[in-house]
Amino acid sequence: MIYADNAATTPVSPAARAAMIDAMDKLWGNPSSLYTFGQLAEEALSDARARVAGCLGAEAGEIIFTSGGSEADNQALRSAAAFGAKKGKKHIISTAFEHHAILHTLDALKAEGFEVTLLPVHSDGLVRPEDLVAALRPDTALVSVMFANNEIGTIQPIARLGEICRQAGVLFHTDAVQAAGHIAIDVKAMNIDMLSLSGHKFHGPKGVGALYVRRGVPVQPLIYGGAQERRRRAGTENLPAIAGMAAALEEACAHLEENAAKVSALRDRLIAGLSAIPHAALNGAAEPRLPGNVNFCFEGIEGESLLLMLDEAGIAASSGSACTSGSLDPSHVLLAIGRPHEVAHGSLRLSLSEANTDADVEHILKEVPRVVDYLRACSPVWDELEKGERSYVIL
Ligand SMILES: *Cc1c(COP(=O)(O)O)cnc(C)c1O
Image (cartoon, rainbow, N blue to C red):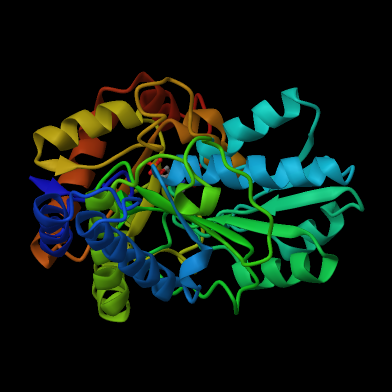
């Protein structure tokens, strides 16, 4: 079986697994306890915090451990909204193609009286800095733009957006769940005030993530209780998961360039090969794009059937995001970049990692065109397209 769904989740790396087992075996004390068992755990926790911070160009005290990317996103938005509201600022800017952890939190904030502007995403899968400049208002409390999109992999001009926000005196958050461990991030150079990441997207465990909050930026907890995480997130720390995530992130960051070079070469072969299928189109510009992301629309077929047949052919891939597969709504990301409904349904996302090989690419390039042909042969829509009773959207 070829695993090509690394944007949904990744297997735990041996280094992360070893760190987790070590933490469970030897560091089971409560980090808040004063005796030695607790202090050993506390030291490991501080060490993990410093290592995660180091991978982002942050300071250890700026890292809050959370239960994952979703919680980090919720906390960033809720916290900034609460502080904005105290100053009478109730306007938030984000984008139309964010992860649902952002979009659904914004819906909740709207119901509580906040006003939300979603920036458009152009057909190349990018947000334009000038659109942000035009959307900023005196009452804007926060701007949140994802670092790289989870479906189409396009990398946003984060440094430029951060600069615009800093100049305007507006808080800037980025959901970097797909970027962390895959492309270089420097929170200081990029003027990022808050950043979310998640362990399981870079070979760490699930159920753990982090929120970076720049020193001096006020932050409010989502979860109240004990004094853990400097009163910014209550609850006894999940040290095995945190240690596993830190080990995975450190390993990913140490091999960032070589992994990116290897994975993007596989990606480019897939993009070139799949582009040869008639009436197929890459979603979003080829560059700047995450090293492992390939996302195509194939006219005249359904993504769901494509996935099932690829599964039988030994390929694990995705259509839309893991959260949208299973529902019949086409991906909001593909709609945001202007794909019409009927085409957005026929999408395929292949997300690669450094564990994929040339042989995997060859197998995918043999199977995808075969399955697309087969599905088109039984598709009434394709039949109408071929007879000229309907016109092609993808030429
Ligand atoms: C996976 C993902 C999340 C959610 O992270 P979890 O740790 O699964 O909660 C948020 N944003 C993006 C862009 C993601 O890809």
